[in-house]
Image (cartoon, rainbow, N blue to C red):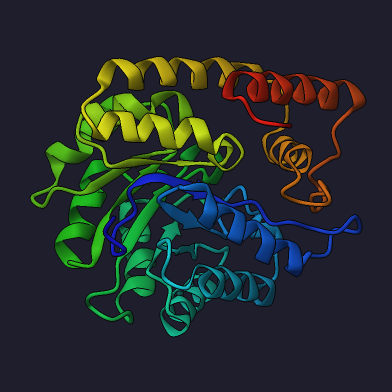
Length: 304
């Protein structure tokens, strides 16, 4: 694996917390080590699943430092640096360089609607101060932020900044990925943020997927990527079908609390608390997740 690229099974890491919503930093260390040992290809803390916009700047910096220290070069670590202000996003990016991260992802600004020129200025302010060889990925999740990185904007960014390597697109739209490829003079690395479209993304020229559930169902995700890389498309599609089935079962349960509950069931974290306003799960939701986990253990022959 190329440590200067986000590719393969990229884990959108959760942030372990204590029951009062404070960060369990020992839990962050243990979780990072678990991910390193799990066989995934890249770690991506401080993103959506990490509750990043609910964390302070100092908390995010400490989490980034822990992931880089624990990985120690064994697995690439890319830090998600997007924030509510341009100044904070730029500060996180420079901090990632300082601590020795392998690269960064930068989410669009949220809530305030921005046009293409505004978004270009935002990304430019974050990327321009960085070393010219420090890898950057654009993170486009328009359903949450309200701002969309168009193919034309991505092409403009890639032309302006050679260290922007590609984009992570969190929407189940393969045609948009194709549009990104067609628009850019330099072929971008394309990653999708949809578990159900991992293999389809690869087949149209993508390089990987950013997944939260991949942390929990790591055996299945890493097997699927290995099958695809080894040319076993039939096997990869069969594994993809299993992932789709689980994805549909999880769909009705709030995503981040569900991931934490499942990781607690697996014994990876000690507490499944999230930071408010994310809510605790109901007993019925926890039971559904317990059933999903037990079924997974049976199918993957895990002593759960």
